[in-house]
Length: 193
Image (cartoon, rainbow, N blue to C red):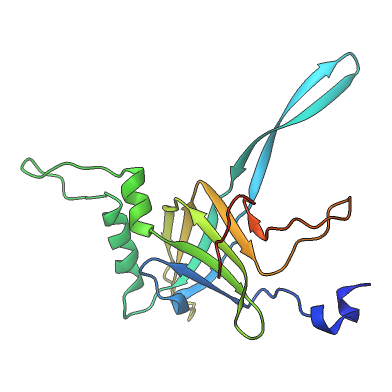
């Protein structure tokens, strides 16, 4: 029986029911965010007229975030301060301490990145937690006399992997059993909403 025949399970996840939590960025300023995704590499083995494929490593893709650039608090200045906290200092001089970005400072600047999908009552039904996130790319909106659009800031976030918690059980496995843990990776006992 499909979900549309069951009043208890009729609702689905919706693209507009979400909130993102990113260090020092007001949630209302986050206009859109892509959910984590990954690719699995492959390697092949050739034998006579056949090619056999084997799965390789999992590589998580970047996440794209679009922010509205408010006047107060200033979105541009907030992002530039996050980059500065990551270790970037354009003030190079003879008597200045030279420093560069490091992974630990870049991750600590962003600190926290969660994507929460919500149900109609506002309760979390899926929570993604990006592990070791840092800002990889920043692009500020172009200016044009032909447009009255809001100014945006486009971010690309790199991370090592993602963990997810869901409210409900997954689809049953082929043998009919349902995994007892709603988390990924399954070894995590609680990510929680």
